[in-house]
Amino acid sequence: MPDTVTAGRRAVVTGISAIAPSGTGAREFWRAVLEGRNALGPLNRFDADGFPVRVAGQVPVGDPVPGVDPRLALQTDRWSQFALLAGEEALRDARVRPGDLPPFGMGVITASSSGGNAFGQREIEALWSKGPRHVGPYQSIAWFYAATTGQLSIRHGSRGPCGVVVAEQAGGLDAIAQARRALVRGDAEVVLTGGTEAPLSPYALTCQSTSGRLSGSADPQRAYLPFDTAARGHVPGEGGALLVLEAEDAARARGADRPYGEIAGHGATFDPQPGPVPRAAASGPPPGTASHGPTALRRAVELALADAGAVPGDVDVVFADAAGVPKADRAEARCLAEVFGPRGVPVTAPKAGYGRLYAGGAPLDVVTALLALREQVIPPTPRGIVPDADHRVDLVTRPRETPLRTALVLARGYGGFNSALVVRAVAR
View 1: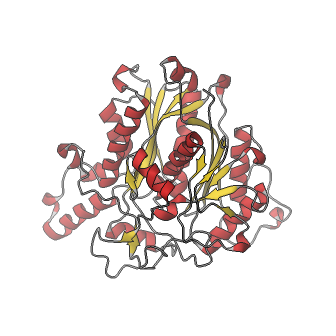
View 2: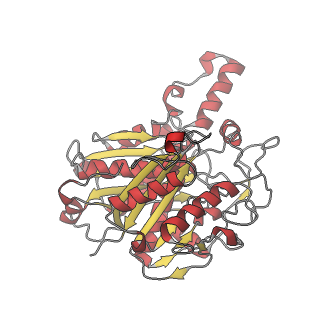
View 3: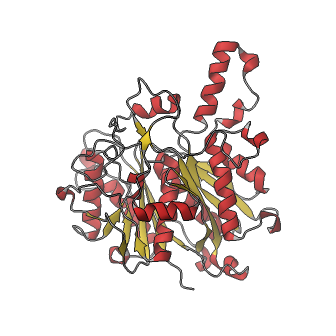
């Protein structure tokens, strides 16, 4: 269901970050996205012989991640280390000093889909090969989905609303929506939100492979082709983004007079269990419920637009989920055609150049959308993709300068999660 904004309060983004295969730091990442740079490459994080995946989106930094306190690196998985660096960048960008806030003034709400998989695998290997005395004391927490939220809250002294959302890629948008809800209800003054992932370990890829959605191509230029006639699955990647959200009135009161944009609306639905449509549902789903096929995603879009007080004609660009799986691409394209009309809105999928980052991917799309609104340019889907004409999608493959005020970000999570987020420019 959409959030209810209390007394007209609006949640705005005052700080952003980015950690991606194509660039570390929001500025470098944005430059790479505008260039349509392909940052995919051979999977070399470990010996991938025997795995169906040959190409991945890898952040080109070592392990542990440079810049993280070595003592903290011993306690955390790579995914949490990404978040620690992203959190520092976002807070610095927003000029927020957590120590200046009231004791319960700051919250942390993140998303994760695979947790600290590499850390957990390493400790389990030690258990079976050497015995329980060789398992480190941090195994009990470092693998857990909420570890990143916990580490961020400890690092910044955050005692406000904290939590974690687990809904694969859709969770990245749902976490931002929860942060918005906390702000408009007055539960916090600042919320650090978003998500990161580091899903490139043997155990993590084994789990992902069961979906049947991973690309087996060994060609980085042709491995991930959303909406293309030759789409064959997605390429997994690591990274993500954290954002600083504030209530607009409080942000302006402290001098943050140029927010990146407003988190204006959100909608989430869940696909029903596959199988025959129940007879009672044959005439259509009851209002407010999900239904079979693309209608559940469409319902999420409609909820988000209604929450934002917007209509389809207000949307200037869609940042697509872009599964890269033919059936899923058809469903998303059909949804967009139903809502906006055939080729009725520009659609882009920059993630085709750096991979699908699961819970980290959607927050990175939100950062990209915010930068697009600020710079008044739609970043491209990397070149080389040949859109399937049957999809009836206006896929942007070159930077397109055009007036932009409202963007729609879509995310679907494996297992049936759908999420849509409306991001809107804020007048200075």
